[in-house]
Length: 409
Image (cartoon, rainbow, N blue to C red; front, side, top):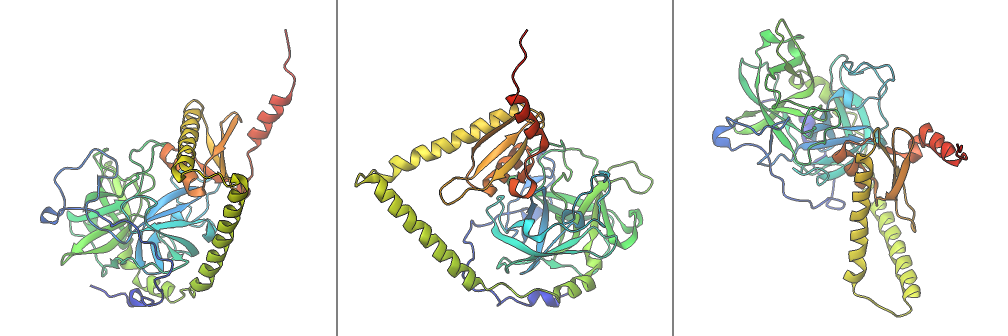
């Protein structure tokens, strides 16, 4: 077992301020038979049944991947998950030479078995892996206190060696299929080195069963093995295809046990952590000012008339549910629908505009960007932030057509 010296650095950097007290994690396997003989017919495998504190949701405004926390400040994922797309890029091209996405476009959720309930972090920096390898690192803006997973010593698999894929991908292979709302696991049997396509950098396994395969969103998912009862990281999911002379479908991952030197060198460049105390002080002051404003405004409006809290809160929740139901029905009845998040202000609730393929649109209250992303992911609708992208031309064309007088006769 190789001890990554940089894993142990910075463990005393963060204090208790700002940590999220989230739900207890549960994940994977009954260890008397590490890999169950059967699995549910869900692409990506079974829901986990034991704790995986290092499992990470890696999201940006154009999609989502999986990842693994390998130190308090670093998450390992697939290289194609952190680069931009090209208009002419083929679907089979991971685009590893493309420019990096903006770091501030990323949101990461660490250490929960339920999507969006993990410890939330932003990204301060993205780092591409060694040339030709589909791996990348995301530097967290603040250290996580979740337990990282250790990268195993350099290894090549034995024929049939048992391993496990953990990921947050879609629950079926269809393009518009919903992503998993709970963490999934998939038992694997790795192929021997002789069956690999590119030497020591790749891990492969057969994927003959279409009900038991990795799907979109599992990219970057950790491939793990057990050593003396401890999980260790050996691979990062890259994609799937065919290898060698066989026509059988193959799973494909980067063998991360071969890049210890790169991991050490990258960790040596870790950025100083932000001054959490000053950030939180500003946050407290802002929240305090908002609370005072709301209290004064409510007092002036009520003129002494008071109602029980539940009498006010219940209609707000019902209205929010009705908005979501309306948006869902609207999207189901149209094709090519995209969602555009419109930020709110201190007095105006954030909204989302749904725009169909022909430019027809509608708008409802949504509350937050994360709420918009959840809505989009669960229904296979792309989500954009309007202040970053603007509205598409087809909306303006639709508005123009709507203003023209209709021809009679």
